[in-house]
Length: 385
Image 1 (cartoon, rainbow, N blue to C red):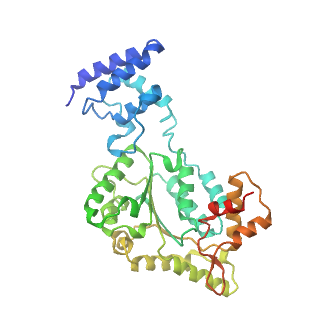
Image 2 (image 1 turned 180 degrees about the vertical axis):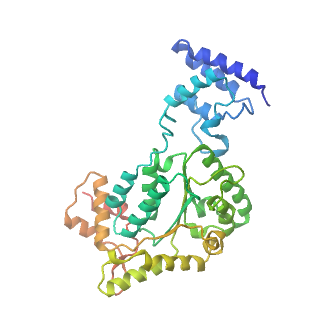
Image 3 (image 1 turned 90 degrees about the vertical axis):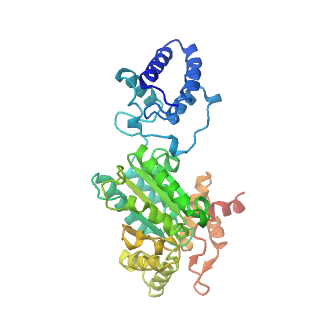
């Protein structure tokens, strides 16, 4: 049912007066107010998500666990619109003490570009193109608040070369809570959209999820893993959000970042890297001019959502980012990091043992790790004392 806004304000005002009373009354009145509050279908734009969040910080044992149901969340700016100014100030101050906002801006968004550069250089191995392109693309986007479109990057390469790893590095440095931030959403194509017959249902769900996250966060990150398995209709459904529009149905998506991760073009990338090796050139001499147009052509000709979607025909991907195949030396570096994460300092012999246990291709050269570094954190268990 709908509640008259004046009556709602009176009830909330009474609740606030109680909340300013002695501490032993705080929990009792919070419980009573919460029970009544959830009976209302709508009190202006106040969301049960926020009230539940506040309640859970008072009475942790009896609260509902946080759900990532975007349909139950509203923008922070709209949260207070239905309350008298005096009480909205009290509510805002109280809510912000719980760590969701601050005077300097949205505390969920950190945009630590120095940390991003450091992590890409120190934690990512064998990917000089990724380190350069991803850093410059995100730096330019963050520093330009008047961008005419969202930033859209497409990561390409074999499994285990670092695509998901880089996506997490980006999330960790742009958002306080990293990949778990409510401003970040990860979609895994075969997991979230498994049935072709339900593609029309998925379209609506995907559009709604993206819209709701953009509404509640001034800067958002969307990651689509195994993007080559997305139905073309799904990509086309969200294509307007990545285009050069001021807004779509009154909502601006220009401060969103879209990352598409796929294995498309992995074989072509490996061939270029192998050719450089055969010619005696260093892999670090491989430039974007050697790979980006090749990747774009591969993506347009591949089976699945990418090739058939308007995302490709509309030229809305800003950068096709190639992840090179990893060599023996890179596997050793990954093993070293995996040991260090467990507080172990391995010797060179141990690192060699881990690296030698991997499968290398092609058959003759045995140059590239067939799994990249994907299984290294699990494989070191075999070599731990």
